[in-house]
Length: 218
Image (cartoon, rainbow, N blue to C red):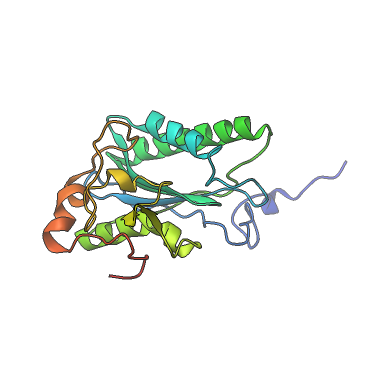
């Protein structure tokens, strides 16, 4: 039997702890949650899995978004890309946010595994999030989420009868802040209305968002 020196067992030391995956999100303390500040969330699926932006996976994601809505937790915008999902999320406090996000990610993994007829990890990395403290940051985040497909091979955009349309794999058709596009009525939407900053505040100080404005453009 080999005995270890108790003086060197455990404790803080170089190289200790779980190793971070290449490109993964560092396990640092998240920014404080405030009900006044929306959060931009990105959830990445594991490499090698099937695409999320399909008619098979998208309904699962929408079902989980609808199921996550609660009194102290709201998902106000979403977009589905092939390897990741972007969300704008609001919560009342740290505990409610953490609990709701764990439940959402867990339900999403189970649902995708079910339709993909597989078992195993779907989201190996911690989700990334950022608090949006200003109305300008909120506007930029809304544009980033709803027009994100323009960054991923969707430069031409969507149209119907020559009229430009929002990304069908996003909540864009229910968004009332487009320039030149009238939002659809709320029934059928899985997202809910956000706080003052995300529903009213940004429009008082900044122009409406163009359907062709790629993230990073005015």
